Image (cartoon, rainbow, N blue to C red):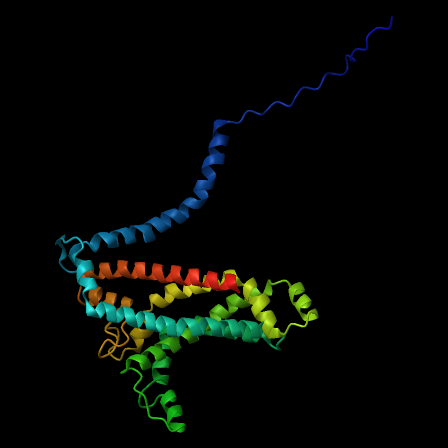
Length: 321
């Protein structure tokens, strides 16, 4: 009878791989390290974002003067006074008006410029760099130049109006004329920047889609609205939200357009005073920090509401398209 086959003494049966013992420090490193990487952002945000926001809310509940300090707790009295203040509603209306006059044409013009630069033009690098130039120039210089352009006596715009037989316009004296002038500054400064964002998004659209549409006989206009715009939808939504936030916080352009300088009044009859200018007037000219803090919180809520509305409308329009 044959002997059973046994393993050779030189061969040892394979043992299942044993798990290496993880040291407590290694386990701690795996759990803690990700939080250490993101901690600087939250520390900076907490110190320069969250704390000022909460502290402003606390100040808005007090009669707080910049010179004399806290005068006592008043609760919601600053908000009651604000919602009964006609200057607040005037500033809110001016802000919304200039926001709409500057943002809507600005984004449409940026979309058109991006589509033009996306084609095979000569000197594309030169034109693309030129789009960013208005955003690089100091906003103070831009405002001063546009103040001269829209000057009443020696402005270029009034000179052109006279050439076609129209009367001169005192751009700083009337509500709509001042809104148009300030909106022109904002459009000139930010249209090129948004156009470059749209152009970068258009560069990532697959060329196969355009080739297939060309074979099907689609025109350039049809391809733009059926392929390009839906493909860059996230970028369009981003620029809408960012432009809403910036437009509702408009301050530098109307302040420098004011003939009285940095007074925060916004013209002789507050015809182009924005919410941020009204905040500046109350807080840094009249030294009423409690009232100015209430304006700041209401402005925060207004910006949030408008940003959400624009974001929702843009998504619905894009989804229907």
